[in-house]
Structure formats: C-alpha cells, structure tokens
Image (cartoon, rainbow over all chains, first blue to last red; front, side, top):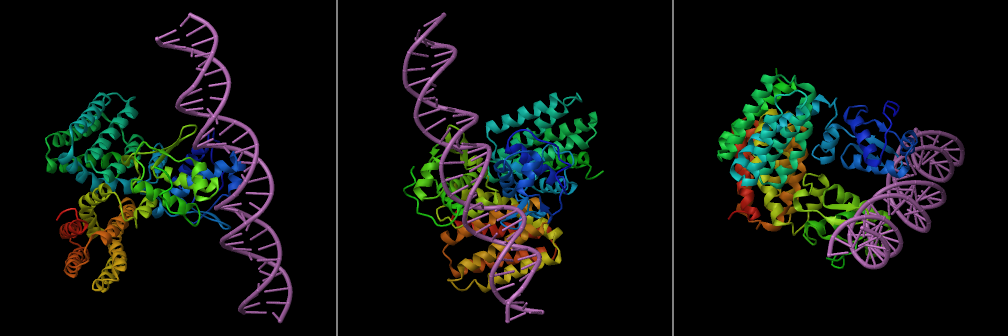
Length: 239
Length: 239
DNA sequence: GTCTAGTAAATGTCTGACATTTAGACAAGG
DNA sequence: CCTTGTCTAAATGTCAGACATTTACTAGAC
C-alpha cells in the first residue's frame, strides 16, 4: 500500500497522525506490512521529518506500529492495538468504515461490561452523577424527534453512557468511557433512524436512569442489558 | 517538589521516563503542580534535551502531564491518568509505594470485572487457552512451597489471570490484562507469604481452571470471585 | 559452504538556532 | 481607576543538518 490514496493534510503533526491512524484502522495496510519510510512520508505530505516522527511516535505508542532502527516500520496485528488508548477512540470516532471486527469486539465488551457498570453506578452514584444522567437523558429526549439532530442526539447518548461509567466511581471503569464514543457514533452510519426505533431506545435508557436513581443494582443491570440489545439491532449485529 | 530526591539514571529516554513516571505515581508531585522545565531536567540528569522531550512525551501521552507552550508542564489529576495504557502498567509494576487509592481502584475493578471475564472464558475458551491456563497453574503449584520463589510464583499468577482474559476471545478484555501485573505484583510486598495462605489461593485458582475447563460459566464466575476475595485479604483491603 | 568484512538503508540521537505561545510588568489613554 | 496596548522574559514547539546505531544484504576469502 502506498500513500497515494491518502488525501493531503493541513495542520500539525496531530492531523498527520490522525490521517495515518485512520488509514491503518480502515485496513489500508495489512499486519506485517512495511510502513512507508519517514522521508517518503515527509516528501509526500511536504512536512518536516520532525512532524513525521512525532506522528509516528503517537501511532507507535498506540500499538499500531512497531519501529526498529535499521529495519524500518512495520504494521502490528490488531490484537496488539491499544484499543483503550483515548487517542485510538478519537481516531476511531468519525471513521465511517471502521473494521466490522472492531465494532463487534467493542459491542461484545460493552454487552458484558456495561450491566456490571450500571449495577455499580446504582450503588455508588452521588447527586451530581444523577444530575449528569438526567441532563443527558433530557437531551436525548429533545433531539429524538427530528432527523437533522441525530448527531446531537448521539452526543447526548455518549454523555449518558459516559455518566454511567463515571457514576461507578471507579478510576478504571471511568477510563473505559472513551470507548463509548466510537461505538455510539457508529450507530449514526448504520441505523435507520426510524422514529419507533428511537422511541424504543429512549424507553430503555429511561429504565436505566430510573434504576440507578432508585439505587436498584439488579434492575440497573437488567435495564443496561436491554439498552444494549437495542443497540445490537441498530448496529446490525443481530437482526 | 524538586528533582534532588530522585536517583541518577543510566540508559536512554525510556529509563528516564520510568524514573519520572514512578516519582509521579508515588505522589512526589501534587496535581496542579508545575513540573520542572526541560532544561533543568536535562541538567540534573546530564542528558540531552532530546531525551528529556522524548520522556516527557511518553508521560504526556499517558495523561500524567499537560504541557503548554509558554506556560510549562503541569501535573494532571489522578482521574485523568490513562490507567489502561500498557506503559502505565509497566511503570506501576515494581513500584513499592504504589498509591493505596490506585491499588484499591484496580482491585475494585477486578472484583467487578473478572467474574464476568471468567464466565466469558468458560464459554469461549479453545484448547490452546486451556493449555495456557494449565501451564500457568502448574507453575503456580511448583513455586508455592518455597519462599525464595515468590517472584516466580507471582509471574505464574499473572500468567494465569492473563490467560483468563485472553480466553475471553475479546480484543478489549484482552487489552485489560496489562492491569494484572501491577495488581498482582503488589501482593509480593504486602502479603505474608504464609504457606496456608498460598495453599488457599491455589485451591481457589484450581476451581476457576476446572470451571473453565468444564465450560461452566456460572461456576467460573463464582470461582473467580472467590479468588479475588482471597486477593483482597492478601492486599490488606479487607481483614 | 561457511564465515567475515563491507556496504547501503533505515531509524535514533545530538546540537544549535529559531518560532510560537504565555504570563507578567508597565505605561499611556480613556 | 480601569482598560488597553506593548514590550520583555521564559517556557515549550519546530526546524535543519550532521552524525550514530542498528539491521539486512552482498561479495569474497578460505
């Protein structure tokens, strides 16, 4: 794979890193492939070697690449990617052609983890956590009816789930909230946005909110599982 | 906080990064504190500015620091740390005075997550996963009796739990295995290494292995919870 | 054939200079 | 008094070039 298919870029090393990372995430290179050399990348995008090195440092830190002096840069296999790195979440967000394998893996993770997290949230939530959840939920309600607000709706959706993770009051679970954005944003491109679909989703989210508010851990677990069943349908994982 | 309390270092930027990161993890600086300037660090450790910048880049990527041109480098609060970054796990491993707040947070996470993971493992494990688990378990058995093999025993312990996460056959859960090493290594410094303690731990691990081998998800969940109850005692979280 | 030296090519490092951003001091003008 | 603008110092960010180190490959010597 060459660089020719990639669009030009403007801006610093961050933009360049995003560009290259998204190309990798979209599968433009296969694991084990050799990645272009620093000088070639710099020549192609007309940036200094420093910028290239900074960008490649990010990709290496995220586990996407492996660099060895003398040999060059190689693409690592998907199992080595640091899916929990916030930078990865940022790169995955907004990527239309995210690898279906990744979408399924993240969904499967959420399906097993989020009920537990919701249960913890029901036990640990403070007043401010409830407020965050309510605020996100009312935002979802307001943006559910109009089609053009679907991006905004997704943001409130992310905020709702992120608030759930934060309400668990555990530093580790909280970090995992980063994964929510790419997972939920993938819904925009794959779901039909039918009104009854969104209504159903809203109802299920309301059950989670109610369960956490009433500090009922078991109910929260069940409700979170129901939300994710709905999500699976919208993601096209089950029919 | 100054740099004076830190030991000298040998080796490249990685060693320097580890040194500074461990100082941060041990709480030598408070959130919001200004971190020493690049030139001061370089002068103190007698390394080039390049090395310093490379080290600081790692710490920034891990969410430990925030750097702004003109202002300087500031220490971020613990909630912003990327606890799931493999580099963080590496830095935490072997740190004797790991912040008790972190130890508890990681333990609480494992207590809520690992039963689920063990359940998944019971459903998804392949032959090679079982082999890994058995190999790690027999290693734990062999090293349980002698006191001087406790470090080796801890390695097998890590391998056992890591094999459990891998057996879930989920890319995200698998990434989380990195957290196990610091958590389990903390046991070495805090537990008494009494023989009956290790025997009890071994028995509980065996139950997890048996449950996964017989593909009994519920039993695996319960057994994993029992292992972690034992861990909590050894970590001094409960008495 | 096998070992060895040599060479090319890639990433890693150093250095010095310069650019950019920020915070603060200070003075002019309303 | 307060605001505004400008200047300066200090910190991180960027660049360019030379050099160091590692790696893979090749060509000979024996």
